Image (cartoon, rainbow, N blue to C red; front, side, top):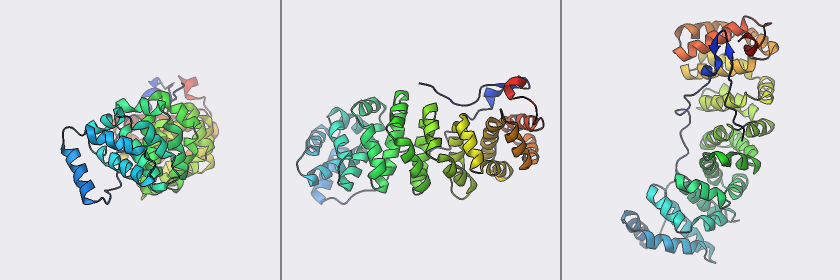
Length: 347
């Protein structure tokens, strides 16, 4: 599998690989377990679940619920999936217990259900199970990826968001990134990024950031039209998506198709504006992106310079963090030599 995480050159005697973006953890809040609230249950069922959750030994209940998942009654299946969803919501130990009790394959079957609520419970239970590292490979090998992608296409808004989170979790196993991309997930995640609600956009961007560490998935994302959404979200400072979108873009621009699409979608003036008025972190990400865009293209360097990038870059080189200063200084030198060779040639 080919990973492509950014640039790796030298310029003016500096190791250009040190100019990559590494501090992205705070920009992406990891997709957590079920965030959809509690569900109405009969008082006797509620008492049973509360007792099981507080008991050290909930194995008997879990075995019964797993059996109910394969019931001929949709209502029984729905109740069992909902209770498994709740049992695994906040108790890590239950996630492994439920998987070991044989719940994975029947839950995967529910993810393909035509009943939207049953599908949603199945998707969210799978998400909760995927939070346990020991379950990730087993979920993927049991066939969870394609049904999750189907839910991403046809599910309720909650099912789509939780399917994106579950795919993110499975993509944390490196070997799953390409199968997820080849299952058709990338265009659907791009669609969720463009058309989803606030949570959907965040979940989609986080999943795409994980998946697009692989070159094949970067190309798929660009072909799916991701650049339009990323540029629009970066231009909207009230969206709370500037950082996330910029980090995804910082991965994508290592492929030529992404650089072309970024320019075509009007991304250069947006990045220059971020350098002017964004937060310190946003400014640094924007400079790192422009470094990759400008590296091999005189035309793009000229475009960036004409957009007025040099004055805010000079300001950043004087007042930013050490890392931001280094990036800004490197880009300034590059822009002031628009007819010179690439970074690699200057090394």
